Amino acid sequence: MRSQNSIFLFFLFLTLIVPAFLPAQWAPIPSGTSQTLHDVYLLNPGYGVAVGDTSTVLVTTDGGDSWLPVASGFKENFQSALALDEDSLLIAGGNYFDGAIYRTPDGGFKWNFVGEGIDLASNGNLIFALDNETIYKSFNRGAGWKPSVIIIGSTIVLDKLIFPADSIGFCFGNISGFATLSAFGYRTDDAGDTWSALFEVDFPNANAYSAAAFPHPDTGFVFTNAFENFQPGALNQLVRVSDFVYDDSDFSDNWRFSSEIVNEDMPGLIRDAYFLDTQVGYAVSENGNIYKTFNGGRDWMVDYEGDTPLNALFVIEEETAIAVGDKGVILKLTDRPTPVREPAFAGELHIYPNPAGEWLTIEIDRPRTGSLRFYNPAGKMVREEILKRQHNLSLRLLPAGLYVVEIKTEEGVLRRKVIVQKETD
Image 1 (cartoon, rainbow, N blue to C red):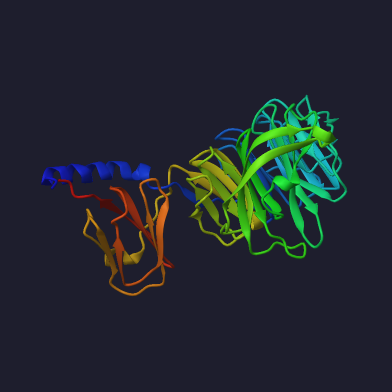
Image 2: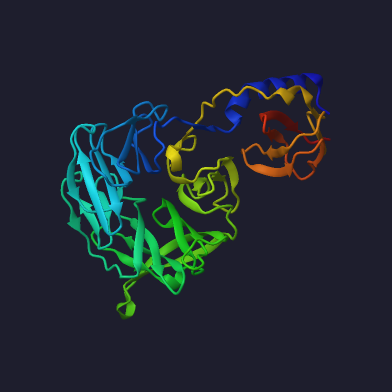
């Protein structure tokens, strides 16, 4: 058994590390607009740009704490943006078949039409743009564009450019079939000069593409949806793709790859995602939630619960990110959580014993409607239940460590620390 002094020191240690343990929070940030926002890009932790409908361009110079509108003078619905430096911006708008790219060298006072495209991407040195006919490449910061070598079929609609490395890039979208859409993609290994298709049959199903993320040039994650009559269906899945090999046998000109369905029933239709590595990632959903995974997408926890569709996500590091969506929604993730006033029922919550062994009892004096969640030392949710007057949780299979109990009701969110310790001989 541990001595009284050991327990005292453990609680002291607990008090010191709790601010670092508690997961960072997604905080709504006033955007000053009700327009749908389609994309966000952070040049560095301080400067970024977000774009959306009716020529909306917003710029932040304080890490996303505030956003100011920048006049563009155009009428397009902007879909994509890049910040080249804190004065030079590229934005793309319109639609897939009639996209336009504009460039400003002076922070938005003057804009010039520079090319055609609907989605923008960068590999750190070069700029790329996508439209219905080709993928363009710019050597001079978007002032001029050169078409690449790619064959895009008439039934293929591409959506997203991704460059996980200087020479390696991917482009994803969908190919139209009978009453449905199926994921389709291309890969380049020569910095965008030539693109070849991903072999369709190597995908594990015929679901439609909804989002993709590549933490490594040879390993990526493709989110899919089982479309029905050309409309999103209820089934959402996550496919891990890897081990790309170029196959030019019999003039096939395809990229072959390995694939695995790592999650057969994703909690929502994913619109954008970002993986920091092959294990840790974020995803934003049409249902308004932000999800986080710690194990390569096999399990996802709700990192933010919302009700407004989210469309784009940009992550600089695990605890620094911005998400944007419909109705001008902007959410900021920071490792400096905003202090939250505890709800009124805080004094009615009882958790015992603490430290706990094999069982933990959680009681609330009066019945309330809400949820109870239990987070492990890695910040992953390991249990979720509908809130009751009393919960008796078995801890027998959980390792020793610092856990967090979270109670969420209409009155607010209440978190309490719990120590799980095992008896020692």
